[in-house]
Amino acid sequence: MMLHRYFIALMIISMYGCSEEKIGPNVQDNTPPKPLTHITAENMSGAVRITYQLPDDPDLLYVAAEYLTRNATPRVFKSSFFNNHILVEGFADAGEYDVKLYAVDRSGNRSEPTTIQVAPLRPPVVEAFNSLTVFEDFGGISLSFVNEAEADIGIAVLVLDQNKERVLLDTYYTARREGIFSLRGLSAQSRTFGFLVSDKWENTSDTLWRELTPLFEEELDKGKFNELYLPTDAGVYNNNGPRFLWDGSAEEPNFQRTASGDFPHHITFDLGVTAKLSRFVFWQRVRYQTTVLAYGNGNPRLFEVWGTDNPAADGSFTGWTKLMDCESIKPSGLPNGQVSNEDVEYASRGEEFIFPFDTPPVRYIRIRFLNTWGNTNFAHIAETNFYGQVVD
Image (cartoon, rainbow, N blue to C red):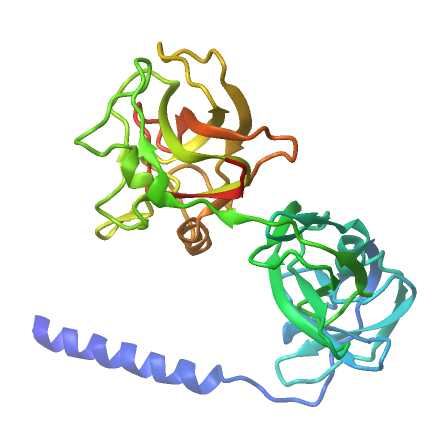
């Protein structure tokens, strides 16, 4: 009897399900929704946020906003009926634009358009371009920028060849609020460089042209580097001494690591030559087998670089000059313990630090660790490169 009732119940459920499919399909009609009402606009950098009241229509699907660019190219944006606002972006310059708004239903019917006039502010492309400062640097050129809107932009570096043709050297893509971008590996000869900013909407700024001469720079010969242990230096963990900072590999298992101890602590080594340093690059330990170590574990977060020509035998800082304060930057800004693919790629390329132009020539380097990404009581670095001009 119980089995019989089970099958009857199952048939009823099945029939009910079928009947739901028959009475609930998408209904196609030719009746458009009513237009949007109570429309207001907030002008932003290269964009406008438009707020509105939706029509009372159960068939409503989304809102569409359309405008024409300066070269008459249409741009269309959509926002779900769950929202009461839409972001319209990609304006190439400040000024007045007509934006048409439509309510669209599930049958594709569009309401009568409501046209509003908006006045977006100067777009990020223009703002970033106006902020560019370019200057000659060791082994290349550098530029600083401000990207107040934190928009996705690309900064292109051009050069004029012998036929006065524009040649693209590199493009730096970023959404950072501000920063410095350097292009290295260039010979110390005068050339005409161009700089322009673009965005994902294919908007492009003017081109800034400058005659620049990169300063001579070379990578210091790692074959001349030597370990140097002074009385106050941190101990070495498992024989992982400073020599692994210049062994030519940022891969496991070779890396420098200090023994556990109270911070701050430091290591010292000999460059083998006296040089006016321009920059150095350091590589974190990025992975151990399948475990991601980037921006964690004993990778330095805050540290100092000191230099001298004559290190004190007692290991004190007498005669040493602090050359630079350094902070390792995680591009994503995620909390400790979290990293993005961008973070891992950035760390894998090495982090570059620029010495001030008035840095005195030095032969001996001391790295003073202040803290690490993993808040450990030890520090490790996988590899370093030092650049500059040898003076002795």
